[in-house]
Length: 86
Image 1 (cartoon, rainbow, N blue to C red):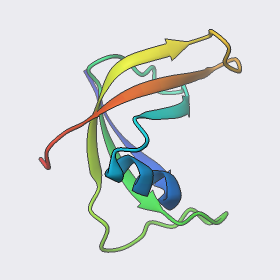
Image 2 (image 1 turned 90 degrees about the vertical axis):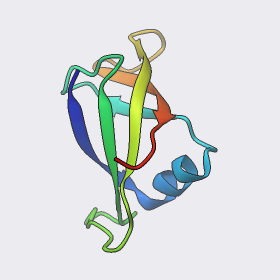
Image 3 (image 1 turned 60 degrees about the vertical axis):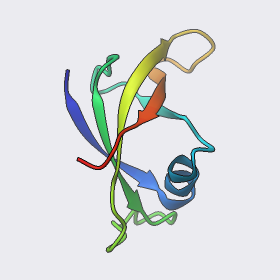
């Protein structure tokens, strides 16, 4: 089990925080696995992807990893379960 710190565009970050978005689509350069912990940090939606100060990160756990099926090569969909602040 690994912990991954990930930049997340503010519009998607907010949807995850509200519970509307329960997944992430990511390039699988980190060998994501069920049980991995994600620390999602809000960044600006523009091309700079700058961290947004004062926004607490979201802690989540990967509960399912969808590979290959219908996805562009190398990408995965990660099902998320939000965790209490750690």
